[in-house]
Image 1 (cartoon, rainbow, N blue to C red):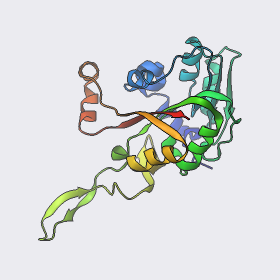
Image 2 (image 1 turned 180 degrees about the vertical axis):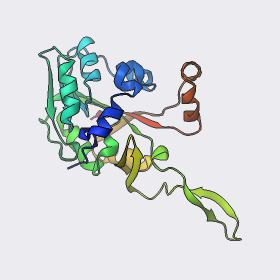
Image 3 (image 1 turned 90 degrees about the vertical axis):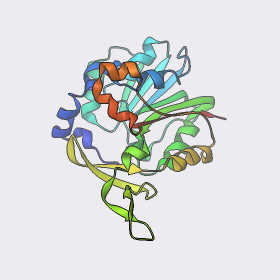
Image 4 (image 1 turned 30 degrees about the horizontal axis):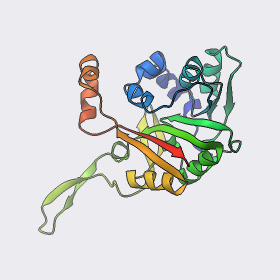
Length: 243
């Protein structure tokens, strides 16, 4: 089972105070870019993988989706999602994305925001999503950018003459990375950009758009803290189509 950090009281309390937790989709700087990658919602059957508080589930229905299934490992997240939803066409269920099993050909759109980096076996996950989508169905997701997930470590690599030449970040060393984010001991799974895209292709997807998110000047003016995102991308946004 994937680590269920969101049901830990300390983590959930801190997460609940984030801007995106309080303001929903409008509180996420990357939402306009992610929204631009989405198809028209009219009549679609949608699954939200890692639905959190249900913000996207409700947005999809408000924009014409026929049915939305929100999945999350966290009971606390799902309880908050249910408390904010009064729509019989939206269903919330507990699911571990590490062991995802969905109805074959049951969906037109699979969406996920900042959840896939908690999954160890991304190749299996992409294969299951591909199986669950109808022909022409789309996967649109965001994840932490691998550059962001491979922060600079103490120490420097040395050139052949002994000079320090670059800080260590072990970008090409894939695998679990443990960080302290809102609470100690949060485990995320680092994969290079190439590994992510090639795994999608191997699963049968046609990658249609890749964006290494950068906030706009207007966003930075409104939220000066976003200026550091210009130094390195924090989020990777991907759109792919099932053939």
